[in-house]
Image (tube, rainbow, N blue to C red):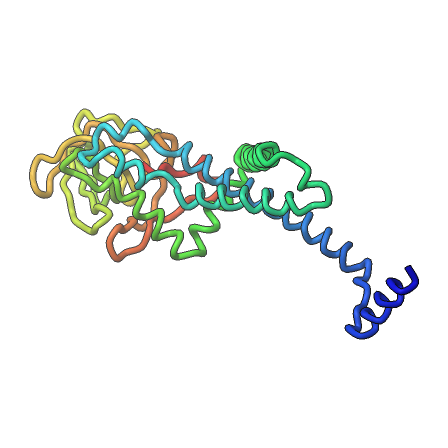
Length: 263
């Protein structure tokens, strides 16, 4: 026994082995828990924005599209946020497994726990308006995010299928309006008998979405007119959004309505 102790002592002295200080393990444990908490919080924020965007998709407009339903679905589903939700759930699972007793828990239980935490955080963020606020901030300050959302909104630019969007550039009585669409093209729109949603009326400068039919190369017969923002509740005045070369549509502040629709 003494020979073994002596050999161990000689090995420690020869290889200059030093004991790991306690602060290292304490710091490591704190960092693991902080990483787990950050993953849960970020996953909750991502899931909240995902729910917010999905809630503002007007699914009824799929009937007006001539493209394949799968292609349209991929154009409106906020798959970027879906990816972030999955990513942060996986990260939460990864870090929780490295907590002092996390390795003892079943993988399915930890996964379910992480999913529930992210969904709960997302629901709270959505209910209290944090999701819409973050979505708005990202759109205002991150050009790549604006371009990504602009592509989703462009599904409204399909006049052959009865969908058109743009800004009213002129009003000719109560029967006709002039419209500059998202691509900068001018249209003469017949609005006789059309249903104006969102407490709107023909007014120069407001952005609208139209359902109806194309009657000529630059003429459109509207049967229903919706405000640009939301699904029939609000409208906004300002520069016309552009889909090609002019950037994404402008965004509404927190006090101007519940949010925008992506279809």
